[in-house]
Image (cartoon, rainbow, N blue to C red; front, side, top):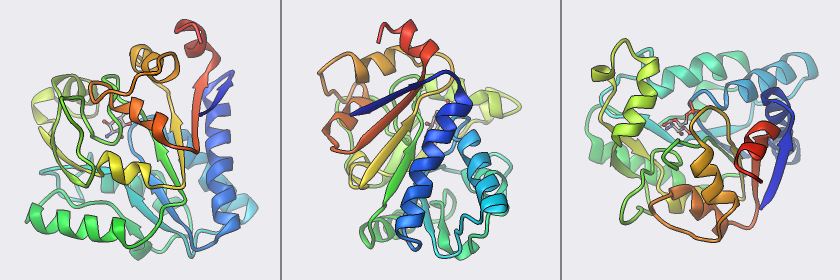
Length: 242
Ligand code: GLP
């Protein structure tokens, strides 16, 4: 594991953007794995700036997103599809048909088949990840076991409570999501985990300060990967005694 500690959030976003840019420059038609939540927003702003000002070219890049809420239409303001359109896809020169965010409405069996087909049909160069306070990655929630492949997941009360900030009221947060499985995530050549936001101390310690791998803390499965970058601020590192 390569652990990068920086002074502030924007420096972390710069490092994540560098890793994604390197993948695109090395292979202009690569596939990038993308994430939602607050953590990657600065990375998307930096990639958008590099596209606009430095000619970073996304015209042949393909993207696949980790997850989507079940029950939100793609056009819903809080769907992960509309988040991605707003934060990144509309800001860079990527053709819309090159972007894939799993669909959370309609026939979910059919949606899962299409998601699984897409994942197994290509290799992801770099997968960007955020971290849930309960240790979830994508929407792989803690439990007795994790799923390897794309599947539906019941969201934890803790996840619903922390994502309620994006909705008018907690009762409007979807209870289910469709997500890449932990096996899918570990298939990417490089993983970049950006840890930002409050309440993530215990999840970060389970990853960085313990040798244990447990489905009770899904993030600990990243220890099995040979090329994982963990990015965190100096403040968080010192709070957990890293
Ligand atoms: C959601 C997403 C995760 C993300 C997590 C953390 O639950 N499904 O992929 O990592 O939120 O979000 P934030 O970065 O807003 O703390």
